[in-house]
Amino acid sequence: MLNELANLAIHNLMRARARLFMTAGGVLVGTTAVILLIALTIGLQTVAETGIGQSQSLTEIRVYPGWSPNPEQTEELPTLSPATVRTFWNIEGVEAVVPIVELRSWAELIADDYRGGGSISGIDPQFLPYLGVRLEGGELTLGENQALVGVLIGENFYDATAEEWTPVVVDLLNTPLEMSVYSQSGGEPEEFDLTVSGVIARGSSFEYNILMPVQRVIELNEFATGQETDFENFTYDWVLVRASDRNVTTQVADELREMGFNASGAADFLRDLNNFFGTMRVILGGVGGVALLVAAFGVANTMTMAILERTREIGLMKAIGATDRDILTIFLIEAGLVGLSGGAAGVLLSYGLQNLVNQAIANLPQQQGGVMFLPLDPTQIGGQLMIIPPELAVFALVLATSVGVIAGLYPSLRAARMLTVTALKTE
Image (cartoon, rainbow, N blue to C red):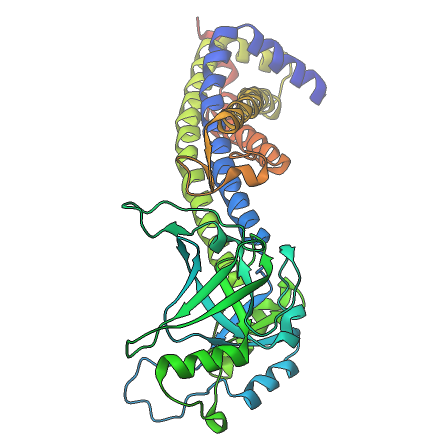
């Protein structure tokens, strides 16, 4: 019975193809708008997540001493003393704990006429395997006056004699380097030859750092500040805590915060990023939904006009035995088919436009960091600025069909409730 009603509904739609195409066209526009706007946010989110994932920092947590904005705070805030740092190993989900000492002055790398620099951090060489960094060259080792240098430092030297700053690439492993560390009180810097034992690859959180033995950095701090180190009250500047899995990173960070420390990591940023893009999907999906709402009015108008034109036909169907339910079913199927056809066309059009946009992005001029006008780098995922997952296409198809059915509900009920005698009298 349902098959017969569906065939009748299809036959009725085919009698007015022009009206069907125009009404379904409105649904097509709305469906395409919803899909493409959501696909754009999915693509941007994927690019951002890929960039963070490539940084190998999703399991990293940076822990800093406790801090309070309240100047009247009387409770003693926790510090990163060696004894306290050792307790971090007891936290469930912690894989590694790497304490860091920062150079408390300005230092400069010298390679012939070129100058460069970066953040200088001291680390105990025995903790190097726990850093989780990849090397572009050299060995993961630290000795006296040796350093592991981030790749970005080698790409950002400059000519000190030039009038304008222009980045110069220096081969860190094969170029003699000298380091100058300046005192906070002025005077002549401490200069010494520096050997680069390894170059930290791009994507690490240390890609713009110079890692040196912690004892050497402590000595340089004594020179820079003019004060001897009090090892009885010694504290680290910060600690890198690595979780065993990205899924427990937030849990570990929360426990560190409960201990009174400031803890942050890429996982927190990723969580905020996901929340942001989730909100953007709702907003942009709503914007596209406005077009579908307009299309719904078009479907309702088309169905109303169809009922007015076929009033006598409705009366004849009822006269030969069609029930109100049959009439309602026929017109709801017609409305649903209008939505389905428009939605299907919208899905196909969306995939076509997605391919065009992604191909255009792939063919645009590239620069370091990605496409010239984008803050993110879609080349990290093959230039896929727009991504339409299968579930989005299915959702859009169901949504378009539902919009058609809902929009056609009132006209269909009106047709079903029409009196047979009244309908037959209509010319």
